[in-house]
Image (tube, rainbow over the protein chains, first blue to last red):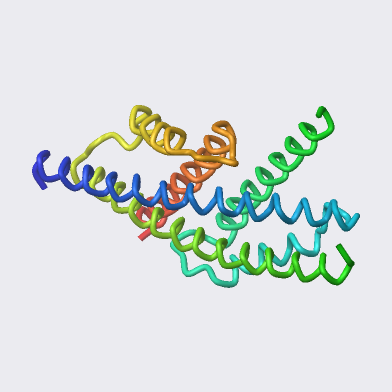
Length: 100
Length: 100
């Protein structure tokens, strides 16, 4: 592989990654919207915010459908971060509401 | 909102989240494959593995296209986790190759 061929291959793969990242970003934001709606329903119905059982369902859904190359533990860590960020966003929304 | 209506709304939103999660999982695995291919090209061409400038490009790509509700810092933290996991996977692959 010449340096020029290597550079062309890297450029193409990076272009693919940039496209994938924007799709991932879009889905993460759509997920955040749905999670926020769940928060609103729970608030309206005075249901508990934190449900560990549902969290396990989320992990089970993704790890049981994982075809790799990411490992099960990698998938779990990624979705822990995702759930954490949705929770932070929810907390921020509630804080802003209280300030109104 | 009756408890039954709340439950029906939660069920529907959770169904949506489960579908989004499988789409996110699929894209994360496709991204991991592309990142692994980048690792292979770099190795074949004896190029440096770590390129901080490219990492900043990745963050810039996603934060500049973020329409929310996730904040810029949330998006950055999520993609830091994603990049970390791809790096771990790459390290694992190289370790296994050396063992052969």
